[in-house]
Amino acid sequence: NNLHALADLTLPASKKESQFCKDVISGLSDTPKKLHSKYFYDDKGDQLFQQIMAMPEYYLTRAELDIFSNQTASLAHAIQIEKGPFDLIELGAGDASKSKFLLRYLIEQRIDFTYRPIDISGHILKELEDNLTTAIPSLSIHSLEGEYFQMLEEATNNSQRRKVVLFLGGNIGNMEIDQAYTFCKDLRHRLNAGDIVLMGFDLKKNPHQILAAYNDQQGITAAFNLNLLTRINRELEGNLDISKFSHYQHYDPVTGACRSFLVSLENQKAMVCGNIVCFAENELIHMEVSQKFSRDQIADLAMTSGFINQHYLNDTNNWFTDVIWIAN
Ligand code: AVJ
Image 1 (cartoon, protein in one colour):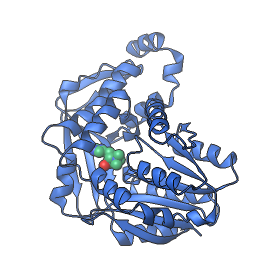
Image 2 (cartoon, protein in one colour; image 1 turned 90 degrees about the vertical axis):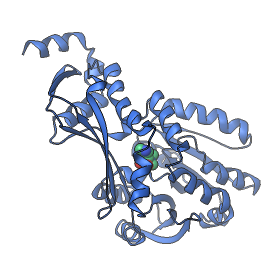
Image 3 (cartoon, helix red, strand yellow; image 1 turned 180 degrees about the horizontal axis):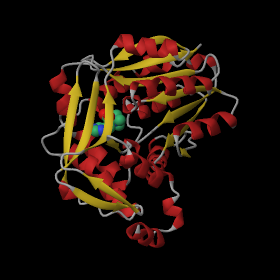
């Protein structure tokens, strides 16, 4: 129709062909509508996530920080530093606030390794490199900007050394369970027997506590979700009316899925990326899943994807666990 044609003329071809545009359009054409939380992290999204980590309700980061700061030597031995030089690859490194403890310890012990942080945000990686070079001058750091597996492939193609892969922060929780299984199998296929994975899982616990972590009083999590609409408006020539959406959070203690949604507050139409998108009143956009796990589920995930579940390191409250898996 005419509106389509008009928008098509004004939007540069590069934008319409971008993965971001394709993913947004296909997600908003689905029933129910969905957007991918990996797109939360533009500069504003990075900032909001920093604020989330500082919220009293958001226990995850402090719990994993507890593990990394108080059990650093155990972590170092669990990744088998006695086995010689290795590449320490971190998927979704962020600000490396947790891994920094391990990095510092390894440097103090004069261990030979290269730190290879992978992140989708170039902005985050730049800051990380600056910070780490100042904090730990003798650290060998070589970062990779892009999607996890593309970059992991690059990291494995360019080096024969054994690999230790960090996947912290409960980032695995942003996948649906079946995707988590596929992800771990893919990860295993890119590694050699004896390579190590150190993965962080948020554990099932009191459902009130979990819901509160994602449904904060100040509305920072709501802003974090809504910011993706702002990003779409800016980067994909959208005209979504942010004031006509509200954040809704849900936790299902049976499945362990904590999900965030945006609810359309009225019947409305918007342009996104040269397409017309219609929302009915109360229609949902599924934004993010943050999956919570039991130890049995974690053990099954390890075994099914070809790892030996070697070791659990828990925080003092037993809210969060970092597991060490060895490729079988
Ligand atoms: C970065 C994926 C671990 O799911 O807990 C925090 C992201 N979303 N609050 C999580 C998030 C809303 C976070 N992870």
